[in-house]
Image (tube, rainbow, N blue to C red):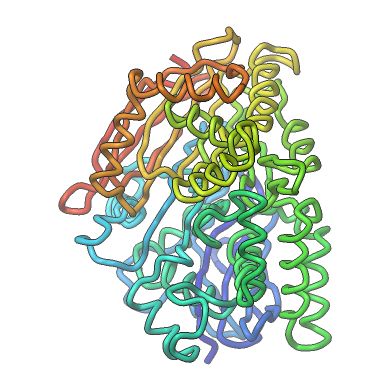
Length: 542
């Protein structure tokens, strides 16, 4: 009998379509069915590195549909599992007249004990939906903005798998090494918690990676890249990380139309059908995606009614050469800027890394970039690079030209220079292990421009780092770094913003609630018993 290794995951949805992703233990025909509703859609698996995957495209659905489904592999039902105790998984299409609720967060450690990482916000949300059913408000979209897995901070379960997979002391120590080990990370993250597995099967989910999905400080600088590619084990590590991300996360972010024309997907299916395994094709693609960032676009955008969600890759598409530095390469930024347009009620720009940081951190990072770039000489530049890597100074503020370009495009939209101004423009981010909201105060714009951060889902910041970030959050804490940035000849920021809500250091999940031209956000945190409770609320358009 075919076994469902991972999934089903309800991924890209629209008003009339849905995508179901699965991994099975052998090649097979996968079908998503519900006889009562006339639902019967299928796909053949493809194989990469001995693992078997299928994406089932379901079309012709009604908007706002809630259709229970089963997964059948080669004629046998493999989902739902018998006596699971969970309600039937549903395909949930979007309702153009019902508003939009997007729940999001980042930085989730799994598995692990409550003593290690606290209660899991995703588990808490799953439990509330399971128990409350239609009596509670469901998210229309779950957006995970980075660090879905930790490839360089291993749990005991992952260490045991590595010990069985390779020789003791084989490099890299205390980190995953290749595609096979990455697949087990995904299994630990998305299979071992029944509540989270059920949640991913019934709430449409979108993702983007951050550094720990590959390695801490991934693509911090040109120097960092040189250091990593000098390691003999790095090629297998980076190709395994990017290749597994493409299959386990990125494939489900694409619309059916984009996937149908995607050359990588076509090449993998062709290689799988002709040779039995597309692993070599996947590795070749992944290595090129790392060495030639412009060859692949990981960012994506979807419109739902009056809402445009742009999810930005702020890791793999960085421009890092000996003479140029950018958060995005030229092609990626042109793509992003082309989608920052008016005419929508709300524009949401999701980036794993916050665009608007506490001012002290923003000035520190822009100062550090200038120093590492040589503004104070070669000796200071070497010291600046060491500080950059040690202190993780690699957010948008550390790519000053990219920050200014993004700010300029957003201001143009907010002023109505690219069509009717949206009611709100919001950056949705994670990464920094605390949550807050910041509002742009200058220059004036017709749109309300905000930064909404929710982090972590499950990986709280240690006490000493909380104290340091509280200091950075204060107005007094920013003054010394503002002076340093000025001394390093960093231009004044094109935006001014104020931290209005937070910081909160709890494990949390945030929900952006949109209705017409109104937009609110709510942060919730799992309490001692594991149940979600309100942490804070804010009105984005207020």
